[in-house]
Image (cartoon, rainbow, N blue to C red; front, side, top):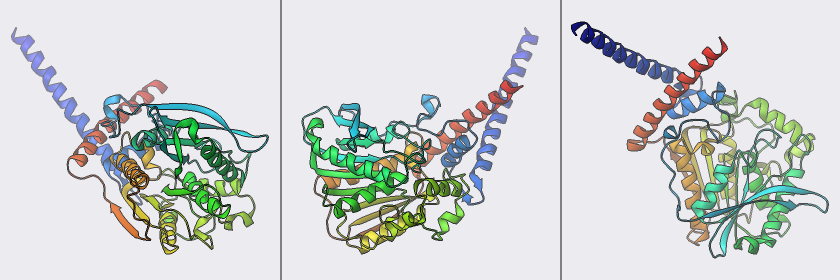
Length: 396
């Protein structure tokens, strides 16, 4: 009996020691992941980037992690049932493109959103499936009809195919609004990255062509120029570690705008457009660790100077495309919430139409949210270390 007790004590001590060593290993790993040449990252941002850059999870929103690591459910309107419909939209007499529509299964008419997905204008970098979580969440949180067209991509289709597809899809959505209980008089455009470029170009094109009346635009970390402009953020965060590299930006320019004359068009580089007047109110969201940060903020300032009400929000401690990871990043949840709040404010007529400029810095989570983010970061870090160990063992 005494011998058994001694062995049980030794086993208990060994388990405690192993647990302690595991905690130290995870904490040490996260500490090193947080350290970069461009600055120290918040723990949650560090573990997400480590996972993606080391191919431990795929670069899309269907992150293969246990449910208990994905954070708390995002706030919204759980009582609103959304209907999803995948269909084709004619963009010319002979060409149709895929599209996805989410709309409330309730009596309308409901506000409408055209959502343009990101992905560097290139095949293989983004599509409706990689952005489905954001598209779906915007529809649910704003009780809106969201139409997301899958515009044609380079290298098979260069500029202006994506722009013309996007504009034709917007006209189609307005003409067919009744099919989805939509209100074409409450039309908004939203886009991220390359899609942010397309979203704001839609407002310029609609103005120039006397097209649909767009009441607001939301631009998430948008690309606003193809010209060789020296921005600090482009130089500091262009390695690709923060999800967007200089190499990808050059590849996008070479394939999407193969002729240098295209680079200065207001429909590719709205930052340099000669006329930005008569454009709708804008919410522009940028990220601290993003090569596109400075050009997005410069464009927000130009919109204000031309007479548009503008809210510019820079989220500190996060990288390009952070809103796509809202399931596991508190800042992503906050960015999505801000987007929905802005759209609801516009749709209800509560946004002041007078020219104004608000620039706010959104700091990383504090208080309870920071504790939750840190706890989730630690749990994800432990999961990633375990997965790394399993990958090593499977190769032996």
